[in-house]
Length: 398
Image 1 (tube, rainbow, N blue to C red):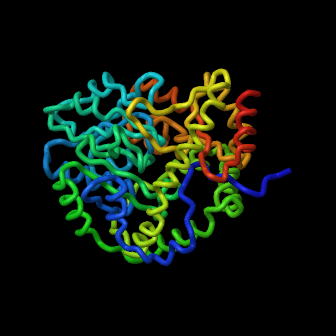
Image 2: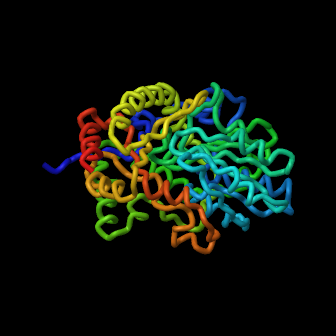
Image 3: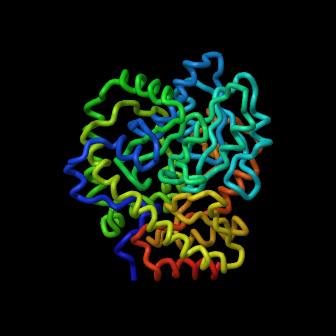
């Protein structure tokens, strides 16, 4: 029987119609309290937060123009670097890990490097301390890309504070959502002050903000298993039917990044929902941990989890198969099933045709391998135990 519902690919905090009343207004204050910091800066997107941080770094070190990022990350990171007129370098990932490979990173560093961007992928916590040690005394800025990991901690402290500045995404499906949005934190208040000054100089773009408001209303109405079959599932299946996995997963982005200030109403909607986020993240963590052992019992399946001192978030369970062929066989059965199985990113950065003029061609075998052998299993509260068991049976049958 054909499913009438669709599980979202990530565990986004379910919005409520009452959130749209926007009775609370201080989104930055609500998130600051949850993250344990004095201040946070709300931006129009996570990409915009990265761009503002890089612009401040440029102001402080105008002779530097190179940004080093992991070879496996969101294409928007490369687009943001290009939009600022900076140059991109990539470093491979460590073997069978989500951390950036330090030897590969070291090979990319010189006096022209402005920033290194270690990335917390899929809610997992990356080793920023190791990057800090590598670049210590060089003047290179460390920007933590925590777009997928709002609420994650290490040794009880929010990620985003180990480097110079860190940012999170509030996009659709990213835990707390204002449809598009971002939030930035930093150890040194001067970073946020400088970024806020740049943001305040941006045009309001009222028409664009009105569009975002309409999109947020639509997200609030449609982010449910039944309407998601139409709003998310139908475009997904159509793209896959046309052999377009990049379009199916939403990895194709325009080369121009909107920069403006988020309006007060959207911030109020986010602030209304924010008080539910800690409890939601705790529930998703318990659910994920309860399901990991079932996956580990399947031969040839590895689940990326936390290390000592880390407490990541769990928008998905990130699974690595023992071969690309087996991963593809599993996705052939699951991707269009409506059960929330998907991929984090389709390619490592060098393999995106759209980025061929931005990303240097170089060897990054570990990133390529991760792209080829991983899939994600949604940790949405709408994924029932029987649905999860059906996914596990497909993994076993492969």
